[in-house]
Length: 207
Length: 207
DNA sequence: CCTACCGATCGGTAGG
DNA sequence: CCTACCGATCGGTAGG
Image 1: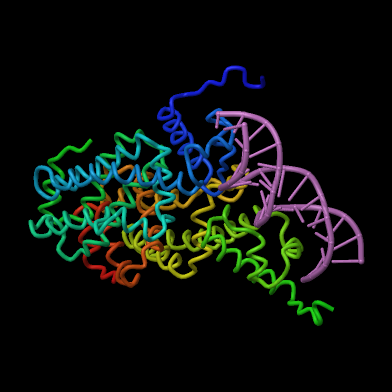
Image 2 (image 1 turned 45 degrees about the vertical axis):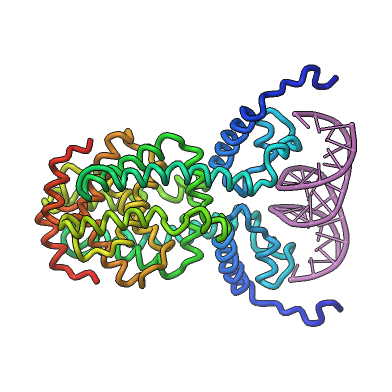
């Protein structure tokens, strides 16, 4: 009587909605500050009903993290392999990552804020032995072999620096990310390049 | 009877201890996940007793944030004003900030994670009209006037990039931060510099 | 997918 | 600085 005709979405559809809403709420507040109650409210179901889709709150978070990681890491691997010299590939990685993070805000934010909390076992299983910094580091090493990246750079340190910068852009929303991205790519890669590498960059027109 | 001789520390001393412990707990877990109960336990008093020192949990966090900001911003202003050309001053700012953040881990972590949550009014009152990026941007603009910083750079974007990098170092703990710092300063500033600026940097020996 | 409920813990207060 | 307590909310479960 209280719920005359219970509108019941198809399971798969509802599950996607739960994920979308959870990503929103987790990113607005933090994971800790977010409550399943609020997620349920926004989805339009009762809190108890959430447990037909999830096992625990933490599992919901972990699912979101895994999802983003798997998708993004695959793309990333392709960019690292595809055409051109080391500088061109680095530029593709930076650009691509930058745009993806600008696209789907909530999910990316959850990923960034919560990866660290995956318990070590799950992390290891997920990442295997190759992390984002690793992929960057390999291309940077190739760039050093080609003579376009400054040879004295520590490849791991350089990789981390690039990643941090790329991933920070989504917090800004100052300039239209389109232009900001181009400038940032230039600045980041210039910092790592030899004069020869800078020449390549200057000819690339990354805006 | 339960507490035969209540060891009562001097108020000021206890207050400092509360701040230290709170910074620890807030940085280990997040602010949201941290409980006053745990802080009280580590301090060695009852939770209710905390309220002789704080008004609310949020006020405790805000106090920590303010404290760090005030100290660091003063130092920062000095580095921005002190000796040398724009490149030298930028280097001093980057280096100094880098070292401070490496020093007192917990407090800095709390600052970074929680500044955004200061309500806008408190933020405005605290920051006035000059923020960290502003200070950087001013020196960068001077560097452009001197011809040592690439003239096409957006000063605000560049400032943010530098800050992000500098503040990310405390998450790494890979290489001894001493050496890492030197490399990072070089890489960051090279990315922003004209050939002339790069020359100055090369002569500086920042390790 | 809901109702109805659980134990635990949260921030905070009163009164001493 | 403690004891004793408050209302609210948390994640999660049982049974339908």
